[in-house]
Image (cartoon, rainbow, N blue to C red; front, top):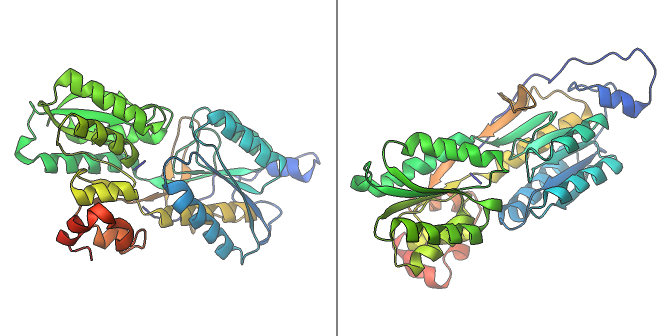
Length: 367
């Protein structure tokens, strides 16, 4: 679900060990950004992403992170990769494998931010620093990069109110379809959206959608239409594009045409925006986020300071003042497709304007 900055002080003071121990033990007890034994470019970075239903992870995040790591290490670094396929238990096993393989640093996008805490602790105990990617994992993480997630929710809420125009009244009924409760980002999106929508419209039905599943979102929308009444829904807040697809399928089946939000600027979402089925998405440029993760991971693996990378600090329930990079976002509508996802090379016009979208693209000047 839905973005770049740089520079922060190291996390903790170096610990002086009174007794002799193994190199691994010393590394595990030193949580500073400057390890006693600095490494060169020949490092191994573990990369764990959460799922492959959302197109972004395999198409953008993974290749962008791997490319940047190679650039930063003169092509000498190795990247060990795995995808958890939305399975928190599998991801915990994958962390164990990374520890066994003795990676130098781990970039982790958690399936379940709370459930992964023990695994993050295991990594730290093994002397492996963890960069939390996209989602703020619990546990002793050393760095974090994501987007300003409350701002994502605010951006979505503001866009929905704009789409409603004169219909944005306290009596207008909105359905909110939020993301998974296991994803801390979902709570932040939700908080940001509520801060904009509350008091301006009525939230008639609201759902927290297990696993961000489009199928679950489709069922929730069907239930909302049945409960609220298909002629009484003014708009739908969808936390991301995948769920927006399931929601719009349910709306179309019921003959309901209302503005729907989204996030991630997935190709299908952009095409629905072109056709007018979906009002907006949140464009989160993946390259700055991926670059920040790679830069912090390489610095930590080499025992270098994060001062030149992270400017922000973020705290979780189990870690305080984590060096962080928070990347800004953009509201994507039909008016700025060319100036965002096309200009940045995320999609070509040919990719967007296929078959049934050609006529709508032409009207928007996407040629």
